[in-house]
Each structure stands twice: as structure tokens, then as C-alpha cells.
Image 1: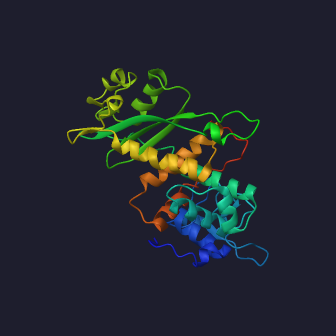
Image 2: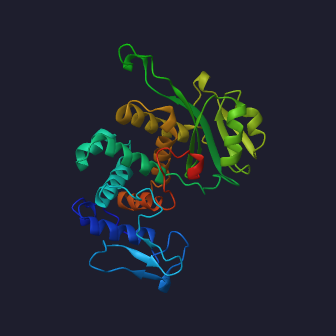
Image 3: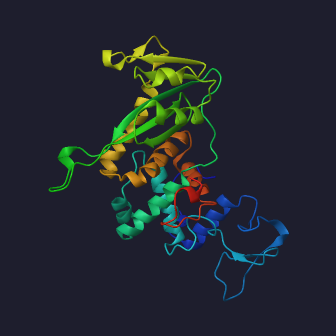
Length: 309
């Protein structure tokens, strides 16, 4: 796996090179039929003059396929090299990148750039991820609000709505972020108990929402932000999750400006992904994002639940 990004690499400019790169990422042990899952000598590569490059045939289900079948790239008319480039740019942009910027960089129209980034945000979602934290580990929980300010509202348009976001961050570990309709124990408890091991020590601010939830964990500590208490000793603080929010808000305000409620979960997945892969190099992170394309054939009109999100 590459550890350094070289934008002159053919994978960003040549479709055949991009396809071969995707095959090494999605098929590390050789071609796999996306329909029946067989591989090895049950797969034949088609090499006729009338056959486009990269097409294989399964001897069991007798169906042809390529590396993009069953992924977010299936049936896309966007060149594969642009998909690979867009994934690398998203993975390397600490505060995110707007679709307008992507449009300028890869030479597409805005609609195509928007399409690419939203499909890649789906790649950042891992439906099989387990809870964070555990015994002798600390999980910080806090909520914030993202959305436009009154001064950013267009003339004659209402003030953009602010959306509540709750994040759980394991110290020196991963983050889980969620859009919630209301900040109360009824909406937060299911999220927290599902995504954080109850063997964890829960760390929050002084909000009245958390004490009852915290009683279900191995311990619960708080800091009183309203009294300007941000660190007590060397253990009691929520600075980890606050730092995550700072980066999230810089991205929302500086790169995206306005995020619709319908797509907010995708943007949160993008920022979570970069945080959770922060120890990787930019090139490794780009490849990791492309790995998430497998098994996510997604139509725009398809409900979120149907995509196993």
C-alpha cells in the first residue's frame, strides 16, 4: 500500500490504471463474484476484442462482472480515475472539500462533483462497527449545533436551521457522531448505550441529561463548563470531544457553509472517518475510503435503511 500521495500517479489520470488499483484494494486475494461470492478457478477473465477491459465471468452464476459491480461506482459514467482522485482529495482534506472545489480540480460540472462526494461519504460509513471504549477506557460525550447564522441567510430566505449533533469520543480512540432531533435523555440514551461499552468511564459536562445515563456505566465524571471549569486535575475534562467539534465546525463553516438535514449524517460520517484513520498516511486513508465502496450499490432515491446504513 502506498504511503505517499503522488498526484502524477497514473491511477489519477488513466482509467485502466485506476481499475487495476481498485482491484488490488477490493480484491486483495483475487477477483470475487459480487453475486455468489466465489473466487479462484471459478472466475475467468474475458479477453475478447469486443470485451471492455476488466470484465470477468463467474462459472457458477454465469454472470459477467467487473470490480465496480456492487459498489457505489456501479454503472457510473464518471471515469474511474476521477473516482480515485475524488476519494484521495476527500481523504486528504482535513476540514473537508466543497463540491465546487472538486469541480474545479477534476474538471467536471457541479452536479457530478456533488454526486461523487456524496457517494464517497457513503463509503465512509461502516455499518458493522462495534462500540467504542471498554474497561479502563474513557469515553467523552458532548453535543453541539451546526448550521448557518442569521447573517448568512439569503435575502428573503429564513435563517438556516441549526442541527444538533452528539459525538462520543474514546480518548486515543475512535469517534461516533449522530444527528439528533432533540437533546434530551430520550434521544441520547439509545445512542450512547449502543455505541459505547458500558464498561467505559463516561465523561460529560454538567448537563442534566447525562447523570441518569452515566449511572449505567462503570463510572461517570463531569466538568462544569457554566462555571468556566474545563479541566479538573489531569483526568476530568471533555477537551477531546471539544477538539473534534472545533474541526467539524471549521469544516462546516469554511468548506460547506450550508448542510441540509437530509445529508448531515453523511458529512458526519466523513469527519468521523478522517478522525478514526488519523494515524494513516493520506494515501493509506484514500485507499481505506475506497475499500468502503464494496457492497454499497446505492441509488439516489433508495431509502437510507435499504442501504444498510
